[in-house]
Image: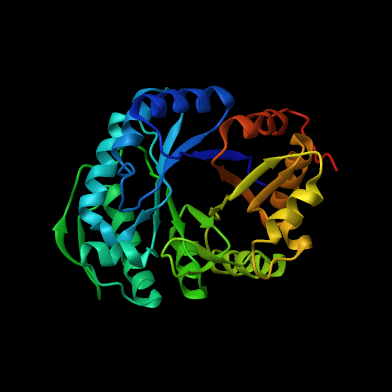
Length: 311
Protein backbone atom coordinates (compact mmCIF):
# COMPACT_ATOMS: atom_id res chain seq x y z
CA UNK A 1 0.00 0.00 0.00
CA UNK A 2 1.42 3.37 -1.00
CA UNK A 3 2.10 6.06 1.59
CA UNK A 4 -0.24 9.04 1.60
CA UNK A 5 0.54 12.09 -0.51
CA UNK A 6 -1.37 15.36 -0.35
CA UNK A 7 -1.83 18.08 -2.93
CA UNK A 8 -3.21 21.61 -2.66
CA UNK A 9 -4.94 23.09 -5.71
CA UNK A 10 -4.85 26.87 -5.55
CA UNK A 11 -7.79 29.18 -5.91
CA UNK A 12 -7.47 32.68 -7.38
CA UNK A 13 -4.69 34.54 -5.54
CA UNK A 14 -2.33 37.43 -6.09
CA UNK A 15 1.29 36.71 -6.98
CA UNK A 16 2.54 37.32 -3.45
CA UNK A 17 -0.34 35.38 -1.89
CA UNK A 18 0.50 32.46 -4.16
CA UNK A 19 4.11 32.36 -2.99
CA UNK A 20 3.00 32.68 0.63
CA UNK A 21 0.45 29.89 0.30
CA UNK A 22 3.08 27.66 -1.29
CA UNK A 23 5.42 28.22 1.66
CA UNK A 24 2.60 27.57 4.12
CA UNK A 25 1.56 24.41 2.26
CA UNK A 26 5.13 23.12 2.41
CA UNK A 27 5.29 23.82 6.15
CA UNK A 28 1.93 22.09 6.68
CA UNK A 29 3.15 18.88 5.06
CA UNK A 30 1.57 19.08 1.62
CA UNK A 31 3.61 17.27 -1.02
CA UNK A 32 2.35 19.01 -4.15
CA UNK A 33 0.83 22.35 -5.11
CA UNK A 34 -1.31 22.57 -8.24
CA UNK A 35 -2.85 25.05 -10.65
CA UNK A 36 -5.76 24.61 -13.06
CA UNK A 37 -5.95 25.28 -16.81
CA UNK A 38 -8.91 27.37 -17.97
CA UNK A 39 -9.26 30.19 -20.47
CA UNK A 40 -10.35 33.17 -18.42
CA UNK A 41 -9.12 35.89 -16.08
CA UNK A 42 -7.25 33.52 -13.78
CA UNK A 43 -3.60 32.57 -13.95
CA UNK A 44 -2.16 30.53 -16.80
CA UNK A 45 -1.12 27.14 -15.43
CA UNK A 46 2.67 26.87 -15.76
CA UNK A 47 4.38 30.14 -14.80
CA UNK A 48 2.80 30.22 -11.30
CA UNK A 49 4.16 26.73 -10.66
CA UNK A 50 7.68 27.94 -11.33
CA UNK A 51 7.18 30.90 -9.00
CA UNK A 52 5.97 28.59 -6.23
CA UNK A 53 8.83 26.17 -6.79
CA UNK A 54 11.24 29.10 -6.47
CA UNK A 55 9.57 30.12 -3.19
CA UNK A 56 9.94 26.64 -1.61
CA UNK A 57 12.54 23.91 -1.25
CA UNK A 58 10.81 20.51 -1.28
CA UNK A 59 7.26 21.17 -2.50
CA UNK A 60 6.50 19.53 -5.84
CA UNK A 61 4.46 21.37 -8.49
CA UNK A 62 1.87 20.02 -10.91
CA UNK A 63 -0.80 21.48 -13.20
CA UNK A 64 -4.07 19.77 -12.20
CA UNK A 65 -4.74 19.36 -15.09
CA UNK A 66 -3.69 20.80 -18.44
CA UNK A 67 -6.17 20.65 -21.31
CA UNK A 68 -4.34 18.54 -23.87
CA UNK A 69 -6.09 20.28 -26.75
CA UNK A 70 -4.58 23.63 -25.73
CA UNK A 71 -0.96 22.38 -25.62
CA UNK A 72 0.97 20.67 -28.41
CA UNK A 73 2.97 17.85 -26.79
CA UNK A 74 6.33 18.99 -28.16
CA UNK A 75 5.97 22.56 -26.93
CA UNK A 76 4.54 21.33 -23.63
CA UNK A 77 7.40 18.88 -23.10
CA UNK A 78 9.93 21.67 -23.71
CA UNK A 79 8.32 23.88 -21.07
CA UNK A 80 7.92 21.09 -18.54
CA UNK A 81 11.50 19.87 -18.97
CA UNK A 82 12.79 23.41 -18.47
CA UNK A 83 10.69 23.79 -15.31
CA UNK A 84 11.99 20.49 -14.01
CA UNK A 85 15.57 21.72 -14.30
CA UNK A 86 14.76 25.13 -12.81
CA UNK A 87 12.93 23.54 -9.85
CA UNK A 88 15.61 20.96 -9.11
CA UNK A 89 13.46 18.05 -10.30
CA UNK A 90 10.17 18.82 -8.57
CA UNK A 91 7.72 18.86 -11.49
CA UNK A 92 4.83 16.51 -12.10
CA UNK A 93 2.68 16.80 -15.22
CA UNK A 94 -1.09 16.51 -15.02
CA UNK A 95 -3.07 16.29 -18.25
CA UNK A 96 -6.67 15.73 -19.29
CA UNK A 97 -8.70 15.58 -22.51
CA UNK A 98 -10.54 18.90 -22.06
CA UNK A 99 -14.20 19.39 -21.24
CA UNK A 100 -15.16 23.08 -21.06
CA UNK A 101 -16.79 23.50 -24.47
CA UNK A 102 -17.42 27.18 -23.74
CA UNK A 103 -13.66 27.79 -23.70
CA UNK A 104 -13.22 26.07 -27.06
CA UNK A 105 -15.98 28.25 -28.48
CA UNK A 106 -14.40 31.39 -27.03
CA UNK A 107 -11.12 30.81 -28.88
CA UNK A 108 -12.70 29.40 -32.05
CA UNK A 109 -11.36 25.87 -31.57
CA UNK A 110 -13.35 22.82 -32.61
CA UNK A 111 -14.71 20.80 -29.71
CA UNK A 112 -14.44 17.19 -30.84
CA UNK A 113 -16.48 14.32 -29.40
CA UNK A 114 -15.09 12.75 -26.20
CA UNK A 115 -13.69 9.68 -27.99
CA UNK A 116 -11.65 11.87 -30.33
CA UNK A 117 -10.32 14.11 -27.55
CA UNK A 118 -9.35 11.09 -25.48
CA UNK A 119 -7.64 9.38 -28.42
CA UNK A 120 -5.69 12.57 -29.13
CA UNK A 121 -4.62 12.76 -25.49
CA UNK A 122 -3.52 9.12 -25.54
CA UNK A 123 -1.16 9.90 -28.42
CA UNK A 124 0.10 13.00 -26.61
CA UNK A 125 0.88 11.00 -23.46
CA UNK A 126 3.04 8.57 -25.41
CA UNK A 127 4.87 11.46 -27.09
CA UNK A 128 5.37 13.35 -23.83
CA UNK A 129 6.77 10.27 -22.11
CA UNK A 130 9.39 9.74 -24.78
CA UNK A 131 10.38 13.40 -25.09
CA UNK A 132 10.72 13.92 -21.33
CA UNK A 133 12.84 10.76 -21.13
CA UNK A 134 15.24 12.22 -23.70
CA UNK A 135 14.32 10.01 -26.66
CA UNK A 136 14.62 10.94 -30.32
CA UNK A 137 10.94 10.85 -31.25
CA UNK A 138 9.33 10.06 -34.56
CA UNK A 139 5.61 9.46 -34.35
CA UNK A 140 2.89 8.89 -36.92
CA UNK A 141 -0.57 8.82 -35.42
CA UNK A 142 -4.04 9.99 -36.30
CA UNK A 143 -3.56 13.30 -34.47
CA UNK A 144 0.19 14.00 -34.29
CA UNK A 145 3.11 13.51 -36.66
CA UNK A 146 6.71 14.02 -35.53
CA UNK A 147 9.97 13.40 -37.34
CA UNK A 148 13.14 13.07 -35.29
CA UNK A 149 12.19 15.50 -32.51
CA UNK A 150 14.53 15.71 -29.54
CA UNK A 151 14.40 18.19 -26.67
CA UNK A 152 16.26 18.78 -23.42
CA UNK A 153 15.27 15.81 -21.27
CA UNK A 154 13.72 16.32 -17.85
CA UNK A 155 16.05 16.43 -14.87
CA UNK A 156 14.20 13.61 -13.11
CA UNK A 157 14.95 10.10 -14.32
CA UNK A 158 11.21 9.73 -14.89
CA UNK A 159 9.11 12.86 -14.58
CA UNK A 160 5.71 11.65 -13.29
CA UNK A 161 2.69 12.06 -15.55
CA UNK A 162 -0.81 12.19 -14.07
CA UNK A 163 -3.72 11.48 -16.41
CA UNK A 164 -7.26 12.53 -15.45
CA UNK A 165 -9.77 10.73 -17.60
CA UNK A 166 -12.99 8.69 -17.64
CA UNK A 167 -14.17 5.87 -19.86
CA UNK A 168 -12.98 2.28 -20.22
CA UNK A 169 -10.64 2.71 -23.18
CA UNK A 170 -9.06 5.90 -21.87
CA UNK A 171 -8.64 4.50 -18.35
CA UNK A 172 -7.06 1.36 -19.76
CA UNK A 173 -4.55 3.43 -21.75
CA UNK A 174 -3.77 5.55 -18.69
CA UNK A 175 -3.29 2.41 -16.59
CA UNK A 176 -0.66 1.25 -19.07
CA UNK A 177 1.18 4.55 -19.58
CA UNK A 178 0.59 7.01 -16.72
CA UNK A 179 2.42 7.23 -13.42
CA UNK A 180 -0.72 8.53 -11.70
CA UNK A 181 -4.40 8.43 -12.56
CA UNK A 182 -6.60 11.29 -11.43
CA UNK A 183 -10.06 10.17 -10.37
CA UNK A 184 -12.79 12.81 -10.19
CA UNK A 185 -16.08 10.92 -10.26
CA UNK A 186 -17.40 13.42 -12.76
CA UNK A 187 -19.52 12.67 -15.80
CA UNK A 188 -20.72 14.84 -18.66
CA UNK A 189 -20.16 18.57 -18.64
CA UNK A 190 -23.33 20.53 -17.87
CA UNK A 191 -24.81 23.44 -19.77
CA UNK A 192 -22.59 26.09 -18.16
CA UNK A 193 -19.50 24.43 -19.64
CA UNK A 194 -17.76 23.95 -16.27
CA UNK A 195 -19.88 21.97 -13.82
CA UNK A 196 -20.31 18.23 -14.23
CA UNK A 197 -22.71 15.41 -13.64
CA UNK A 198 -21.71 13.83 -10.32
CA UNK A 199 -21.05 10.07 -10.38
CA UNK A 200 -19.93 9.19 -6.86
CA UNK A 201 -21.57 5.80 -6.33
CA UNK A 202 -19.14 3.50 -4.56
CA UNK A 203 -19.81 0.53 -6.84
CA UNK A 204 -18.97 2.65 -9.88
CA UNK A 205 -15.60 3.51 -8.37
CA UNK A 206 -15.09 -0.16 -7.50
CA UNK A 207 -15.49 -1.00 -11.19
CA UNK A 208 -13.15 1.79 -12.33
CA UNK A 209 -10.39 0.73 -9.96
CA UNK A 210 -10.77 -2.93 -10.95
CA UNK A 211 -10.47 -1.91 -14.62
CA UNK A 212 -7.30 0.08 -13.85
CA UNK A 213 -5.77 -2.80 -11.91
CA UNK A 214 -6.55 -5.25 -14.68
CA UNK A 215 -5.14 -3.00 -17.42
CA UNK A 216 -1.99 -2.34 -15.37
CA UNK A 217 -1.44 -5.99 -14.47
CA UNK A 218 1.58 -6.36 -16.76
CA UNK A 219 3.37 -3.39 -15.13
CA UNK A 220 5.85 -3.75 -12.30
CA UNK A 221 4.81 -0.34 -10.93
CA UNK A 222 1.06 0.16 -10.78
CA UNK A 223 -0.07 3.79 -11.20
CA UNK A 224 -0.68 5.88 -8.11
CA UNK A 225 -4.35 6.80 -7.69
CA UNK A 226 -5.35 10.39 -6.99
CA UNK A 227 -8.72 11.78 -5.86
CA UNK A 228 -9.58 15.44 -6.33
CA UNK A 229 -11.61 16.18 -3.20
CA UNK A 230 -14.38 18.61 -4.04
CA UNK A 231 -15.36 19.59 -0.48
CA UNK A 232 -13.50 19.53 2.82
CA UNK A 233 -15.87 20.42 5.65
CA UNK A 234 -14.74 20.17 9.26
CA UNK A 235 -17.82 19.58 11.41
CA UNK A 236 -19.00 17.67 14.46
CA UNK A 237 -22.01 16.36 12.52
CA UNK A 238 -20.79 14.43 9.51
CA UNK A 239 -24.21 13.09 8.53
CA UNK A 240 -25.80 16.56 8.63
CA UNK A 241 -23.04 17.97 6.39
CA UNK A 242 -23.57 15.15 3.91
CA UNK A 243 -27.35 15.64 3.97
CA UNK A 244 -26.93 19.32 3.20
CA UNK A 245 -24.66 18.55 0.26
CA UNK A 246 -26.84 15.89 -1.36
CA UNK A 247 -29.79 18.28 -1.42
CA UNK A 248 -27.98 20.03 -4.29
CA UNK A 249 -26.56 16.95 -6.05
CA UNK A 250 -29.00 14.93 -8.11
CA UNK A 251 -28.91 11.17 -7.59
CA UNK A 252 -26.37 11.14 -4.74
CA UNK A 253 -27.40 9.04 -1.75
CA UNK A 254 -26.41 9.76 1.82
CA UNK A 255 -24.45 6.51 1.97
CA UNK A 256 -22.46 7.40 -1.14
CA UNK A 257 -21.79 10.93 0.13
CA UNK A 258 -20.32 9.47 3.31
CA UNK A 259 -18.33 6.83 1.42
CA UNK A 260 -16.94 8.68 -1.60
CA UNK A 261 -13.30 9.82 -1.60
CA UNK A 262 -14.38 13.04 -3.33
CA UNK A 263 -15.86 14.46 -0.12
CA UNK A 264 -14.07 14.86 3.23
CA UNK A 265 -16.62 15.55 5.96
CA UNK A 266 -16.46 15.38 9.74
CA UNK A 267 -14.02 16.06 12.52
CA UNK A 268 -10.31 15.96 11.73
CA UNK A 269 -10.17 12.46 13.19
CA UNK A 270 -13.20 11.30 11.20
CA UNK A 271 -11.75 12.64 7.95
CA UNK A 272 -8.41 10.96 8.67
CA UNK A 273 -10.22 7.68 9.28
CA UNK A 274 -12.23 8.16 6.08
CA UNK A 275 -9.08 8.61 3.99
CA UNK A 276 -7.59 5.47 5.54
CA UNK A 277 -10.74 3.61 4.52
CA UNK A 278 -10.56 4.97 0.97
CA UNK A 279 -6.93 3.92 0.65
CA UNK A 280 -7.74 0.45 1.93
CA UNK A 281 -10.78 -0.07 -0.32
CA UNK A 282 -9.64 1.59 -3.55
CA UNK A 283 -5.89 2.06 -3.19
CA UNK A 284 -6.25 5.85 -3.41
CA UNK A 285 -3.25 7.30 -1.60
CA UNK A 286 -2.89 10.75 -3.17
CA UNK A 287 -5.57 13.29 -2.24
CA UNK A 288 -5.78 16.81 -3.66
CA UNK A 289 -7.82 19.42 -1.79
CA UNK A 290 -8.43 23.16 -2.03
CA UNK A 291 -8.47 23.94 1.69
CA UNK A 292 -5.09 24.52 3.36
CA UNK A 293 -5.91 25.42 6.96
CA UNK A 294 -8.80 22.98 7.42
CA UNK A 295 -6.83 20.09 5.96
CA UNK A 296 -3.43 20.65 7.61
CA UNK A 297 -4.44 18.99 10.92
CA UNK A 298 -5.56 15.92 8.97
CA UNK A 299 -2.13 15.63 7.37
CA UNK A 300 -0.53 15.77 10.81
CA UNK A 301 -2.76 12.94 12.02
CA UNK A 302 -2.07 10.75 8.99
CA UNK A 303 1.67 11.35 9.11
CA UNK A 304 2.02 10.06 12.66
CA UNK A 305 4.12 6.86 12.65
CA UNK A 306 1.39 4.91 14.42
CA UNK A 307 -1.49 6.45 12.49
CA UNK A 308 -4.32 3.94 12.17
CA UNK A 309 -7.98 4.19 11.18
CA UNK A 310 -9.75 6.00 13.97
CA UNK A 311 -13.29 4.73 13.47
